[in-house]
Amino acid sequence: MYKLTPEGQDYLKNGLPEKQLLKSIGDEKPLEEVSKLPKSGIGIGWARRNAWIEIKDRKVKLTELGNKAINEKTRMENALEEIDKNGKTNEELTKILMRRNLIEEVERTPEELSLKPKPSFWQRLMGFFYKKETSVAEVSQVSKIAQLTPQLIKTGEWKNKTFRKYDVNAPAPKVYAGKKQPYVQFEEDIRDKLIGLGFQEMKGPLVETSFWNCDALFIPQDHPAKSMQDIFYMKNPSTGRLPDENLISKVKATHEGGWVTESTGWGGHWSKEESKKILMRSHTTAVSARKLYEIGEKPGKYFSIDRNFRPEAIDASHLAEFYQCEGIVVGKDLSFRNVLGYLKEISQSIGSIDVKFKPGFFPYTEPSVEGFVKHPQMGWIEVLPAGLFRPELLRPLGIENYQVLAWGIGISRLAMAKLNITDIRMLFSDDLEWLRKTPMVK
Image (cartoon, rainbow, N blue to C red; front, side, top):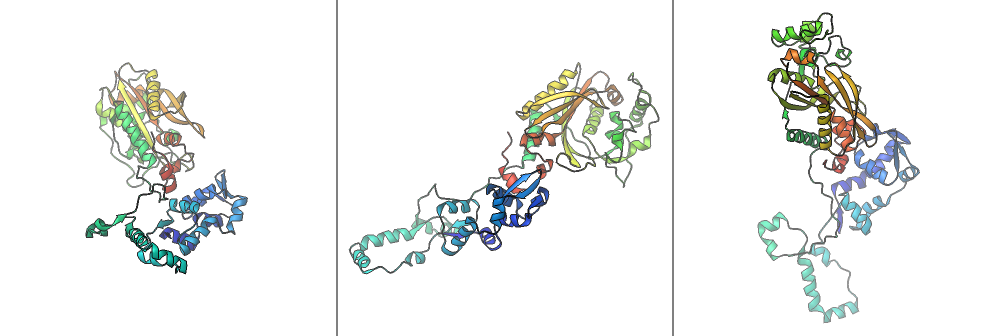
């Protein structure tokens, strides 16, 4: 015998999520709007399974079967009514309802077992001859229980009970094991792999001065990336403190004329006031600059996995807040081949992802490279900008005899390729259906 769970009673009264979804869509509706509907994750999954909807170009459209199903009572709805009235339905639908956690099995009470139709004369006559055996069977059936309850344990009554045999083929509600959110797990795996490769983790502030975010990296003060369209500037307070004057003077001299780097610099006048402006960190390369100034001429390998902020238009491949995996290697006799070697090593440690490179340009690295990974559906996407830090960045920070390899992996896009998703917003999704179905990343 079965009975409806609270969720099953809700669906019996208000309709199954997939039927509610059909009525809300009309003929066609954007996927983004459909995803905001109540229980949309469950509804979309079952509607697609029933071939009631199709999703193309991020739009949900009813199929011919879907239009037909709106005005018809489905087998699932009939099964819920049967369970509610009679406590049973056919075996196939029972299994489906149990998997959806809409029904649960209930133990028949002795009173229910005694409610049998009155036997006929011949049944009573046969019962007379087999009275003893029938009595034993009935007592045995009544005394069997299916579940051990806290009450039975507390009272000790379980000692006097006979337990029903465990049926491994009986339908049971699906239990979802606890696991980490896929994107969190992916980031932790990257962190573990970098530590395994001998890197140390470094940290830096999310709210940064323009000095560390731009000037110390040899980004010119009139660079387009420093406009309001590419950086979040703070209003209150709007300026912050700069480091010691010795470092400031070296950075100023490098920007204006190259200082001792054999470079001509950017020319013009370097503004101290511009350098004081406070902003939301736009890349974790600012953390690398702080770390290099801290350690000076000491070999080492460091990384950071942290948030950055840019006023991007939010879409399937861009967010205003994104994670970046920054890495630097400080040592002698390092070359561009080492840059490519580290990038390939990191990529291969993540898993079977195809990688390719092409020349790139960044104000603070030379030579520079842009690395791309192959997304199963979106094709090649840029996630691995890297290069060798320029002398104009290193000399003012006190590094003269060492080279520094650097990269800023777009870890969010890398996760998209690994998790095979086409919308970056899914990385932060609270859709239980997606979270349950997404396998553990290996």
